[in-house]
Image 1 (spheres, rainbow, N blue to C red):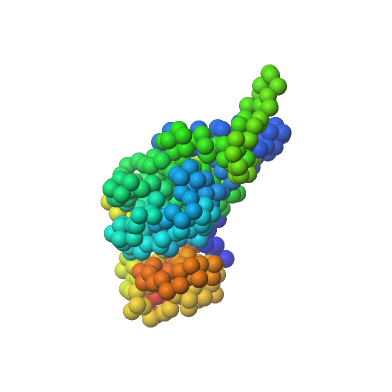
Image 2: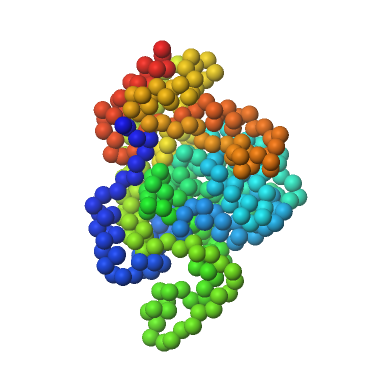
Length: 375
């Protein structure tokens, strides 16, 4: 079976985890701090806060941005459900905007949704292709809104020559196994805002005034206070040790993934009745996923294509989900129609892309798609 994805983890990561376990410091310790410093430097941000996953990072971002009950946050429906859930966690209301053909939120439609209750716009860099950050920064400045970036898929991607994570004050990353780099699970929030940085560090560890690392390294007895109701959103040092090794390889990983993604684009360009991802001039994608859209004229249905590929032992996944059509949002979104998002979701498939991916497997995916789509 050719899988849809798999993490690139080697003996380096295994050794780093092993060595960390033997130190007996395995939670929120020196390795977490080192990973934060390295990641902030890598993306060009002043600060980085490691968290248990991207969803908890998004939750903290909502809190420090001042989003609360009855506020509205504009976001795409076409994203994993965690995007919208993070808004609901703080009692606010997700307002779903359309996306463009690039799978990213449509700035024109987003502006039409702004009301006096709107407090922020949450953009998503879908499948590793950056959204138009400058357009949304201008929109947020125009209406005095906060901009938050869901960069779960975008570690290593760039926008206008700068790494995702450096452009705004709240950017949330995922280190899930389906992402470009992984710590098993885990996440990171980058920011240039010192107030946000300090409060996120406080909130991720139960609102504790003194973290364990400071307390254990002190030559004086210290007693912590809990300054506000916080959360247990910590990353372990074992995960961080793995993450450090992953970040060291991230640029290489991205370039290897890009070779596969660009090969797919070249080989599938002449296949009729499909639309392939387009890398706009200002973006450099990490090719976290590769999505193919089947035009209405395509003779094979999306579901039949997926089944035929599975019969050939090639795994695929459906197009990016639309949150407003999930059962959990059925009552909340009753009557809402987002035709572009729905069409992209229903007529797209994600095909295998990971490293190392053998050339024979890449060619099997290409040749199988050519045969099925031309038949």
